[in-house]
Image (cartoon, rainbow, N blue to C red; front, side):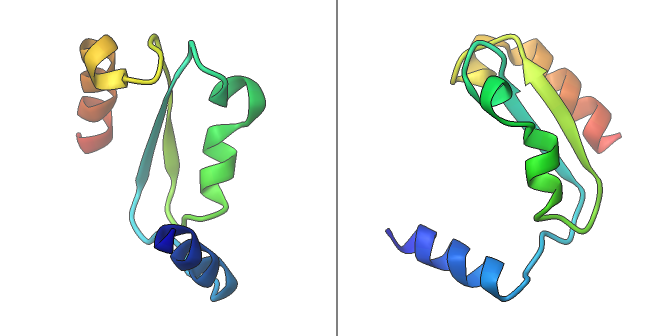
Length: 77
């Protein structure tokens, strides 16, 4: 939909995320197996990208709230 169009326009224009970025993904899913999420997102960010896998499936906050909050605490410290 329109999001994909906006993403393509942003990438073509060289737009980058200008604030530190926290990237989390569920380690029971495929994202960490198929990609290197921190490296992927670093291509779109000017600031450091941090984060990691959370012991969960797709619903990180519901399945592993303590792990998500731990990442939040470190990121926002």
